[in-house]
Length: 151
Image (cartoon, rainbow, N blue to C red; front, side):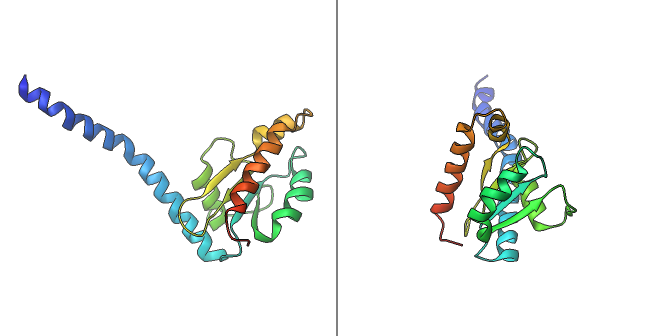
């Protein structure tokens, strides 16, 4: 019984490591994809905006976001032809997973991991005349971008 009691912490640590591996791989993939994005687009581009041509957000994004952040942004319009192999598509996939993946803003700092700001729920509320969530998400994005050197 004493041997089994001493083995328990080792088994628990091994289980924790096993459970942590997918998360570690996920974070490493995001960082590597962000590095490739920076390599491809350079220091002037620190934002990836991903959206579709939905009437719920396309006009808003094109009228408000692109004039505001367009110089520092790479845009992936998923309604238009795009390739999985494109770095912007790879970053979008790596950063967002399958939840609320469009529309989304992905901030790519000069080094390290990306910051994802999701807008699907905000635009869902916005189409019903409730803009609080959209304003809050835009303020979050603006605050994250403000911490970076201007693009």
